[in-house]
Structures are given as C-alpha cells and as structure tokens.
Image 1 (spheres, rainbow, N blue to C red):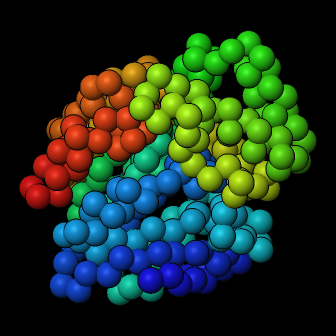
Image 2: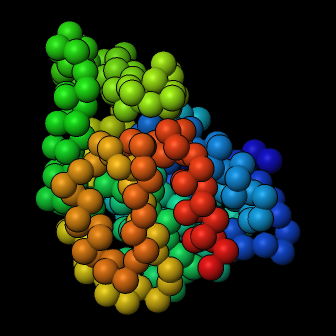
Length: 277
C-alpha cells in the first residue's frame, strides 16, 4: 500500500506492508538523500511484521517544499509517519545514514523504540559523522580506478555547485565501488536516477553540526549492530559499538556495505535472531 504522509513542508512517499496485530518495523534508508533499495529487507520482515518504508524529505518521491533539512525536521518526519499509523512504539531498522537517523531518534524518544537494528551504520553525528565520511572516501578510493575516482571528485564538486547530474555521477560510481568484488558487482545498489542535489548539502551540514550522540549503557531495548567484514565504514564502527556496549555485535563474512545483497544467508540469520528475540 502506498500513501503520502504530510508533515510541515514535506510530503513523504510511504510504502506500507500491512500485517494487522503484529509489531511494526520502520525502515530508514541511507545516503543521506539516496534511496538505497531496502526492498528485499522489507519483503523478508513483512513475513512476520507490519513494515513501513518512506523516502526521506527531499529524496526520490518525497518533495520538500520548505527546504528544511534540519535534524529536528527529520525527527518530526518519523513522528508523523508513526502518527499516521497510530503507532505508540515501533522497531527501527536503519542502514548507513539511516542507522545514524535511528540513533538520533532513539536518543530523543527511547520510550517509543522497541528495538534498533543498525545495519552498517554511520558512526554518529558531529565529528563521528566526519570520521565516517573519511572512512567511506578512503574505502571507495582503494576500490576505484584512478579515472573513476577523478570522475567521482568532479561529480561531487559539481553537486556542491548545485548540479543534480554531478551527484548522480558521484553516487553511481560509488555504488559500483560498493559492489565491486561481490556477487552483485555489476549492479548499483540504489536508485541513482532519483538522487537530487537540493537536500544533500544542507542535510550533511546539519548532521555535522549536531552534537555527538550520547553513550547509552542501558538503552532499555534490544540493539543489534551489524557490519560487513569488508564494510566501507571501518574505523568509525567503534563509535556505535562503544555507544551501545550491551548491544549484539554481528559481522557478516564476505560482505561489504550491502550485506543483504553480498551475503544474504548470514545477514538474514542475524535479522531473524534480532526480531524473534
């Protein structure tokens, strides 16, 4: 089922896999501002849960008319989605930036969160986000040809100057690097054609300006922290693991930043263990 959730100046394109009487999992895609193909995860989770996906503000099919890309706006968006479906509490699954988004929300409203599944999550906000950006740049550069890396740099510069095509070029080449050496090598794991330049820079700026997320020794709900053995997020993983010291830590072997594509067996085992607990 597809619907639009109106919140402030944004209209959030939302997909619901209804399952009356079951708990709800809300999926948060990565990027930011890049729809990254969580469809297979939604399909698996919807076998036992109600699942909700939405394109974040300014991303893909969710226009943002007020041009507000503050952290408070992202938090309000998630609240609006929950209200639309009369949810007092729910599980959060976040991939990459979506894992950071999930942690931000859980820090604000822990009483509404039933669990966190942090899949290849960015390290966090503030300087932890800067560390993640360096991680990814270093990882991608090592797995790209010199020509592709140069094209990525040009695309990023054009994107910063206001070019949607520039950011699309950057993310297309990054997507190829993410999958290089894995079974999905010749695929790009997100919808590059739906990337738009407008939300990227202000969202990244808001994440960098946000205070570093707090240490949470006892969150009050289950937390699974999962990374691929060859993940693009490397050193900054430790910030997430240190933030949730009682969380369950999982490494998916023979996998990069998209474990449900690179090595689905161990990934879905970890998913099942988390949501059956």
